[in-house]
Image (cartoon, rainbow, N blue to C red; front, side, top):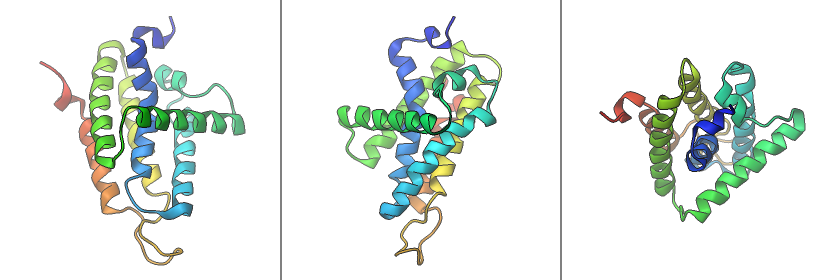
Amino acid sequence: MDIKDKYTEDTWGKIKRLPYMVAIGMEGAGRSGLSGSAQERHAAVVSVLSAREAFPGNPLISRILPLSDGEKAEMDVIAQHDSAMNFLSASGIRSATDLWNHIEACALEVLQALAKHEAGDTLTDYRQWLLRIASDVSVAAKEGDFFGIGGVLVSEEERECYARLERALDLESGEED
């Protein structure tokens, strides 16, 4: 049985889309300018694809990642990123606050579904992957600099968003009794 067959179509869509929403949330958390935004998007692509090496035995992550390699895999990740952005826009999400509220609600639903259907390190790896994506994007470019002068590597807004993600991924606090 294909791992996605354990889930409703809606839940599988959220499981697959959440890594990209985390990347989008971190990309929008600070003000990194045009060049910095490009660096953050590239970091998101690299971070998503790095899960192949970081979590090679995880069937869930393997099923989410594109089957292609090299530049084709990067283009597939960009397409999924764009698809997630289109989904968010179509869902009426127009502000960073709305986006992070959506990410938190989605994370809770996804983690509860995964906890019911997955064993071993599958869920732990997925959570670590999401945090890694957030971290990689947050350190990809300086925030608040002027043509590379000044600024900080990780803005206060990025730290706050990362902390929100950590709390949202804390399964114990989100489990129902």
